[in-house]
Image (tube, rainbow over all chains, first blue to last red; front, side, top):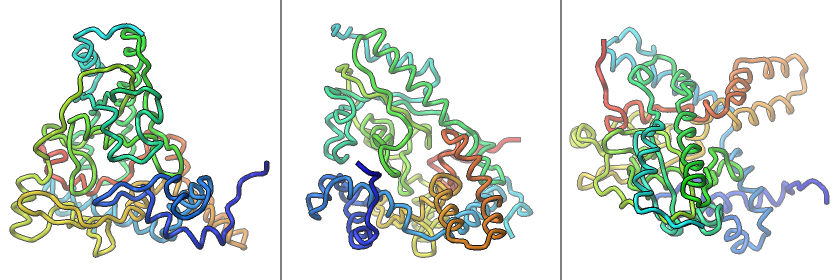
Length: 93
Length: 285
């Protein structure tokens, strides 16, 4: 048995639906479905759904969003320190 | 299997507190069925599971919350302290009570999905409730780290917490004044952040959450960040430009974080940093 590789076309066709149904992203009002439940609903096999879900989790945002995360945290952290310690000079400019 | 002594639950809780837990509770294993998908329920991991013992503690200290670098809070390594308590309990259940005990590992079952949701476990064990920002908050101690042990022992189960820590009184006042809360203001979904919600009759109601963006912030320098830079590097045809990516600060920090992965998993605390229910602002000299 060879190494399991997901067909990019299968991924592109199903990624949005798999993410929407899965428990990867917590929803407000209901639990997500298991990979097996999603597979049954979409007519796929469970390992394929697992692979689609795992890749899609990482594929939602481009690398630029990681850079924005750094900038967000740097600013939020310094702004809090400035407010909490009453030291306006610490605020991120 | 031996019969469970009548004081077993109490004794186990005493061991947990002595080992360093701030709080300890017991959840009914079957209670997970309504909330967790198959393969992520206690009995899926340990056949015959009857209860789940949950410990919480190892909170960041006041100095951690006011540190001026966001990276300091993520490298305090406090999660490991509570994981050690979980392992200790698993050992006690097996050696002293004679029941199977499965320490829930902090890793993932597949992708980013944990074996068992520790937040759900804490909630079902009566140790806290979900905040508007997401993390479970304990009424007395606020934000903390969790560890859990699934067991076949029929321990006494604790009821869920009835009054939530979130929203805290200052947040209710802020909502009346500004129609926002500290967590919603620092990380708003409508402005490039992760959270959306409102207060309704004094209760927090979550209306939106961008988990994918939250992942870029919580796991900036971790598995996801590594994969993203690796992909960018493989797609870069210029050798010198590839070098800039591989040797650069982002990749270097990421590799350090992965090397010490169990102490670096959480890397964004901004919604909790501003949360009055999470830690309170202790003025110190």
